[in-house]
Length: 229
Image 1 (spheres, rainbow, N blue to C red):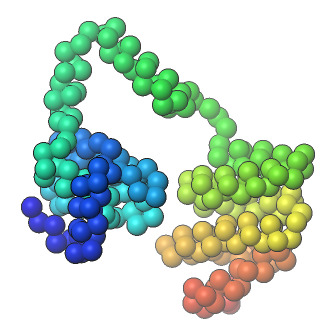
Image 2: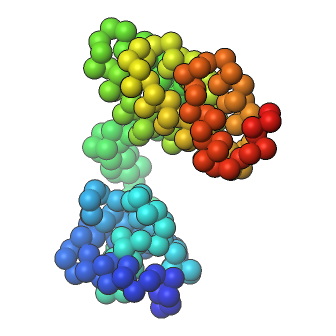
Image 3: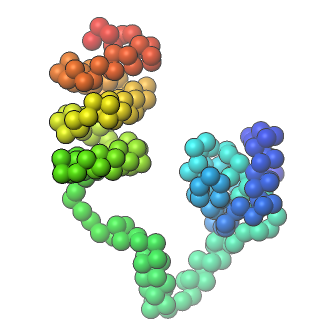
């Protein structure tokens, strides 16, 4: 098994994680390993057995010690055969399968996988901002939602549309700047492949003086051509 894509330190730490039973489970499904590995948090990890490349929910994301720990678990024979598991499921009658399905949905609160809603992520963000008018501590709730959900999952247009709402509802200057910095930084990261979005952001910055950090980011990212836009 060629593990050269993992450097020596990653291999050592991954092996140590495996030996210390930090791999909660390892399931082989086709040519992919699926698992959960403990670390600073509980990380969902996948490894492609053809290329040995790993994807993880940890901050490093790719070819990390958690992925290597999963490989070590597989090499040591400590894994569940997912193909066999599903084959056994296929032999159950419908009522037995439904009972298992209901149990999984209830245990892991997976209702949102089956309930269709018209409400968008942007709608949720706007509603949270309105709550900041009712109680100040809701600003922290919104900031947490922004960091953990909105920045990762919102479309570029949604990121742009939330800016005027943030300026409208967040009154405390330091908190407003913190939130705007987060949104602007995310847009500039995405701007590496989408300059049109940055042009729209520049247009917004001309309208709202609170977006003074946009010009600083243009210089930091060396997008000098946008200075003339």
